[in-house]
Length: 316
Image (cartoon, rainbow, N blue to C red):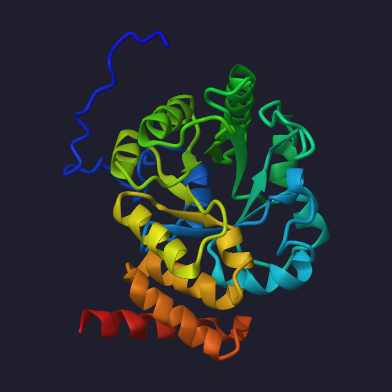
C-alpha cells in the first residue's frame, strides 16, 4: 500500500478537541440549521445520542425483529434519541405525530443475495429528505472495498447536497467480509469520511485502541451496535465506547432482538447518557424486564427515574 508518511502516534488523548460556541465536536462552525438538526439527534445535556437503527431491510429484507416495525419499533420511539430508518419505512409505518428526529438511509444497491455489497449508489434525493423533515441522512462508505471510489463520491455528492439544504450527513464505515476490523483500519476510514465532509461518523467498536479512533476523527463518532450480543456484553461495549470518546451509539439488533427491547433501550440510554456502569445497567435491564417489559410512552419518565435511582445506588 503506497504511503506518503507513516501513520502517526501523537493522539494527545488527554487533550479533548475544543468546540467553542457549540457542544458537539467539529460542529461549531456549521450553519444554524445544521447545528439545530445535530442538536435534535445529540442530546445537548449529555452531548450523546442513542440512535435506534432499523434500516436493515434495505438490503436484508424482514430481518428478525423487524418483521413488523409497527409492532416492534414504534413502541420504542419514545425511548430513543433518533431513529435511523429508510424513507419507505418512515412514510408507511412511522406516525407523523412522532416528534423524534429521523435520520434516513440514503444509499442502496445490492441485496444479501449478492456476494459484493459495496456496489452501492445514492438511493434518495436530498429534496426528499427536506420534504420528510429529516434531521440527517446516512450513507455507507466502503474504504478498501472494490467500489471504494464510487462510495466515497456518493458520500461527497450527498455532503454537497446536505450543505445546500442544511442537513447533516452521517458517513458509515462499511467493512467487507475479508477486511480486518482493527483500530488502524477504522482510524483510516473514519478520518477519510470526516476529511471529505461528513458531519458525523458511524463505526464499529474495537477493544484495542478505540480511543485513538475517536481522538483522530475531528467529528462525532457513534458506535454501531453490530451483531446481537448477550445484553451485558452489549451494554459493556456501549459503555466502553462512550468512555473512550464516542458520542453515543446507533444500535439495532442488540435492542430489537433482545428478549425485552423496552428494558434494553432504557439500559442503553442509562449507559450512554448517565455513564451507568455496565453491571448496574444490566441490573436495570433485568429489573425492567421483570416488570414485564411494559414501559409504554406514558411511562418514559418512570423509566428515566429508575435509571437515575440505579445510578445513584451505584455511586453509593
